[in-house]
Image (cartoon, rainbow, N blue to C red; front, top):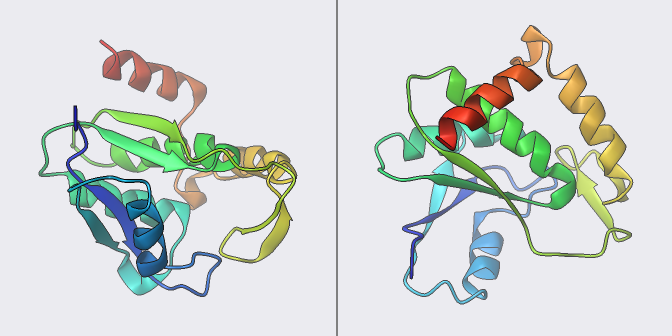
Length: 159
C-alpha cells in the first residue's frame, strides 16, 4: 500500500545546520520511495527553524485531504510535533498530525542543532529540547500547547 502522496522538505537557507532541499531530497529518494514526489516547502524569508517549518508544512497541506506525518530525529520529535500542533491551532485547518521517528542513528554521534548554533551528541540535546518546550510555551515564542491542549488534540485526532 502506498499511502504517502508526497514528501515535503523545507526549501530555505542551508547555512543554519540544515543541509538543504537538494541534499535531503537525494537522501530521501535512496529510501526507495518509488513515485512519491519530494516537494519543496518554501520557508518565508528562507530561514529554517521548527516553527516556520511547521507553518510552511501546514500551509502546503491545507488543501490536501489526508493526514500529516512529522518526521524528525527522535531527540527533536516531541518538540517538532508540539510546534506543529501549536501552529495548526492558529488556523481553522482540520488536520490529523502524527509523529514519526526518523531513521535510527547513534545517540552518541555529534550533530548540529538549533539553526547550526549548537553542537552536541543527540543524547546531549535531550535536555535542551525539553527546556525549549518549556521556554517556548511563553506567548512571545508562539505559545507551545499545554499538556491539556495536547490531550484534547490527541483525543480529537484519534476519535
